[in-house]
Amino acid sequence: MNDMTKVLTALKLHHESFFGAHEFAEQTAQPTPEDSRAWSQIIVSLLTDINGLGRKKGPDLRDGSDVKSANIWQSIDTPRFNGVIKSGTKSVTSDKLESLDSMPFLFFVLWDNEPNSKKERVRIWVVRTQEDKLFRETCKKWYDLRMTGDIISNNFQLHPPRNKNLNVFRNTCGNLNYPLLFNAVWEQDHYEIITYDPDVLTNGECSTI
Image (cartoon, rainbow, N blue to C red; front, side, top):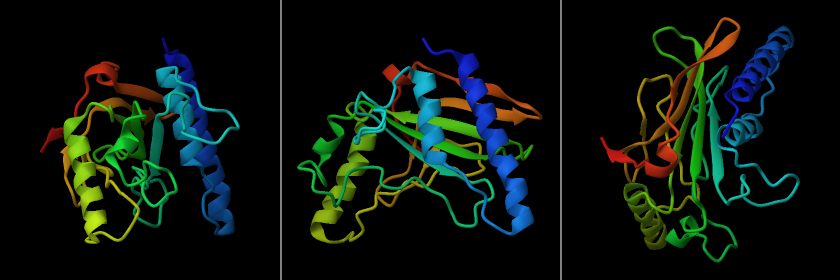
């Protein structure tokens, strides 16, 4: 069982680190330093009790799962989830639906702002990649279009609901509602948990819009 106190402590440290650095970035006209990838993996590990691989190469989590992240704060471009599924690599399962069969979960971590209060927040969605039929159908459509040459890029992107109170991810091959695992909003000096639904780790499924 995860220790939610540790989750909230880590989230607070991330927030303080980011905006503490941002103060100096503004003074020096430099970009704000941040590492959404590493922080997102840490938070997911604390939430799920699934650790990473340490210094070893491979998936983000020791059970074969991956974590994708996007951070809207102070961003000058349009953050999205990149490289969601294997494509264009030397792996024998690259560009094949079988690449999902050894991956229990795909976690998506979005750092954005609640649209009404404008407060910073973090949301985490999860897909059971071996079981989720609609997600796999979307991936298969994209792989098929790669095979025919209709899609040239090897970057499968998902466009998250940035600064919106939605669970819709968009892709040229399918727009779906994704299962929400966690949602927390920053309140002055700490995060308040709005949603925590661990049941999606065993029962969650994407749904049509």
